[in-house]
Each structure stands twice: as structure tokens, then as C-alpha cells.
Image (cartoon, rainbow, N blue to C red; front, side, top):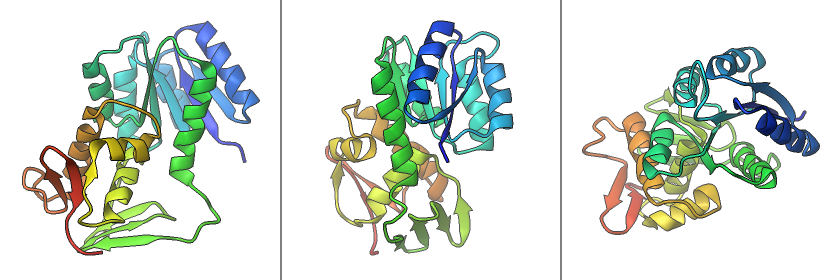
Length: 227
């Protein structure tokens, strides 16, 4: 069954163009023109991925994303005409998984959508992988993360980042390595720091004194412990 994509943008021309390219690529597409409408469509259509324009009437993309994140860990991709790092950091802190600035190539957008969905669903023919470090467990097939038997809900990017680290405990990953493995394209290094901050808030007893994910100053991060 084709994945269903929700795209929300107040510019009809962008909606029409992106919808045409996504449909041509084999996706189901539903649309919205405001953040409030996007939230309504999301709740009724249950899409596999959401594309949100940042600046929309009634409710902007930031607020729509915050409300969606309270209900679901569906992958989120932001569209914005602004290129400031602070905007990208804001999106990542909310729980965004991808960020594309306007103007953009519709073909590039489709490629990003495909890559993000691949990261989430992976290769269904591959053997299941389960990794454990102390009382933290990650199941790659069910995409379930637990700590002391209690489920932890992660965004797709948080899950992938944890999977990279937990599969190679004590191996130091640079920020650039994590960016390449996580997104498959160049991005700003601070994005990794934001994802790590969000991840620690969910898996650590005290994020200020992390037990699992250690910062290697001037280099990157590593997972402490033995698999």
C-alpha cells in the first residue's frame, strides 16, 4: 500500500506542484492550507509523513507540529523561506526530522521524502536486530525502545540516532559522521546537538549527567557501556 503524505502550505501553487510530484512518485497525498486544517486532516487521515510550511494563517507550522508531536511520532518535514539557524533549531527541538528551504526542487523534496520513509521502515526482508546497553533496549524491527521495560516514544530521527550509537557502544562518532548516517546529506552540525539533547531528555534520569550518551568534547558522542 502506498504511503500517505500530508502537505500543508498556504500557497496553492506549491500545494499543486508538490502534490503532482508526490502522486507521480506513487504516494497518496492529502493537503491543507492552514495549520489548523493540517491538524484536522492529520487526525482524520493518519498520514505516514507530514510536510508543514512554517508560515501559515490561523496556526503556524510550529504550533501545528507541537500539537501533532503530542499525539504521534510521525515523521515531520518543515518547509520554510527562512534560512536562519535559529529557525532550524526551533524545528528540530519541536521534533522535526527534515528541513527544506524555499525555493526548492520538487524532485529533491520527493527524494527527501523517500529517504525519510526508508529510514523509518527500512528493509523488511532484513533480519531483526535488537540492541541492549544495560537496561536500555532498541528493537529495529518493531522500532520499539524500552528502558527498564517501559516504552519510550522517540521521533524517527531520535530513533535512528540512538540506533547508530547503541549498535556500537563505546565507539566515538563525530558530528559529521552522525549527520551523514542520519540524513544522508550535508546539514549543520548543531542539528545533532539538538537531537542528542532531545534524546537525553527521554532516556536519561538526569540529562545534565548522562548515563548512556556521553559527549566527547571537540569530537562528538558515544554510547557508554557494553552491548
